[in-house]
Amino acid sequence: MSWFKRVKEGITTSTEDKKAVPDGLWHKCPRCKKAILASDHQANCYVCPSCKYHDKVGSAEYFEILFDDGICEELFAGIKPTDPLTFSDTKDYKSRLAESQKKSGLTDALRAATGNVDGMPLVVACMDFNFIGGSMGSVMGEKIARAIDYGREHKIPVMVISKSGGARMMEAAFSLMQMAKTSAKLALLAKDGIPYISLLTDPTTGGVTASFAMLGDFNIAEPEALIGFAGPRVIRETIGKDLPKGFQSSEFLLEHGFVDFITPRTELKSKLGQLLRLLANKPKESEQAS
Amino acid sequence: MTTYFDFEKSIQELDEQLQKAKQLAEKSKIDLAPTIKDLEEKILLEKKKIYGNLTGWQRVQISRHADRPYALDYIEHCFTDFIEQHGDRNVKDDKAIVGGLARLGNQSVMVIGHQKGRNTKQRQFRNFGMPNPEGYRKALRLMKLAEKFNIPIVTLIDTPGASPGLEAEERGQGEAIAKNLLEMSVLKVPVICVVIGEGASGGALGIGVGDKVLMLENTWYSVISPESCSSILWRSWDHKAKAAEALKLTATDMLQNGLIDGIIAEPLGGAHNNPEEMYATMKETLTQQIEELKKFGSEDLINKRIEKFSGMGAFEEV
Image 1: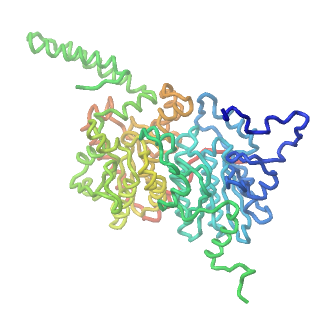
Image 2: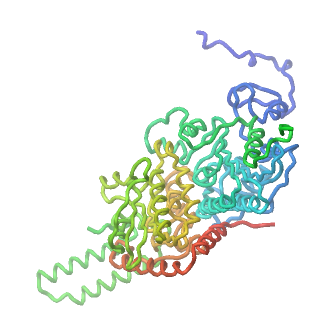
């Protein structure tokens, strides 16, 4: 009858013995449930030290992790979404936008910034999954296009950090055409010989995968991210079978040849620095042979 | 046997009356010519009324009509000397995308299109017009070949979407489509894309980046099918008609939003009602467009193409 026994002692703690903990001081890993100090979690790039779970974080966190001393200049922040089709499903798109903007404090699902990463200049466009699932609408497409233009103009490499369910249905064909638009811009970047890095994080699917996310000179993935064209649910329904374990994971993509390498977020910045210096044929100052 | 849509019920009834009148006239030798003429006029009027006022969902239905001309039908009737080329030179030959060199009037062209099937067996053979990565890679191979020999490219779009499946993911469906978007935007030869049926999302766009993107009158082009849109946003398939309206997926909407370059008129009652007329219009349009585009140098073409797609989007800037 052991399964009736209380295994977790925590439940038996009496109320007066419970410690009052200020909100946000602790972080509980959504996967292994271990709690660590929120500040430690942050210092570890929002990766669980026990199970290596990479927490879903947004542009603010990535900019803080990547840019030297967290210093960067945000680009094209004045570009804001509209409702070109007066789209309405169970809710109208306008109020969906307003709600998401209020909740997230963001204007849309992507922010672009430029600064130094490990001493090397880089333009970074990063998605925010908490804004309508990181979906790609006109704003995302336009900001990525301009980030690429910025990179071409200033001869700075460009990186896009993807974390998205795909195209934004509420902008329908406008969203679809962002795939063509961003890919065309990448063709120009390639012509200018400026590096483009695509960082694939959990999750990256749909129209994002079928355009700029797969077009990196370097496709880099965070560990155990879901990356695919069709969503797992759609595939399961189509083939009528359960999907094999690890299907559409970063490791699966690496195995099938679509990702250059996987890097944990904790090593991302140094890896990028290394990569950018190799591309620029420029050794690290501290390592320069005397 | 003609297949009628729900919204064509009045046409069906008149058609039946017309058949009966014709039969009766033949059997009884009574002069029914005035009645027949009257009925034919009524049918024409009714068709004009219905087809002059189609909803988005009705056009989606027409775009999927099993008697509609498919890519190979256009290839057979608008082009000559077609030599089908198979395979992506890597994995296999995808049957959902066909292509090869052909002649349009006096002009050699590379024609590539999604291909659907008409009966169950054909549909399975063509995977319902849903390409795998090797289909997109075959298409790209043929486009690069055309570029090499300075031959204009025509693509015919008609797909319910790129195939979602284990093998498609293993072989990089996303990468295959993405690569085509990038490469097509810098092709040095004229590229004309025509949506001839369904234009579903990335699966359609994967052969859809061109100098001129045209849609037949009764086709649709969007980021998702109305059914899938309904199931995601309304959590049921019942709202597909509403979803079709919301997505603004008709040729008229797409042109209005500046996302395509033109509309090709269909015969009254849809392309399947008079394929010969459709082929003639298609041939004429393509010939005209190619002549027009041949005037531009490759750099000009590429710049204009990229500029066009770069301008697509709706946002405000403060």
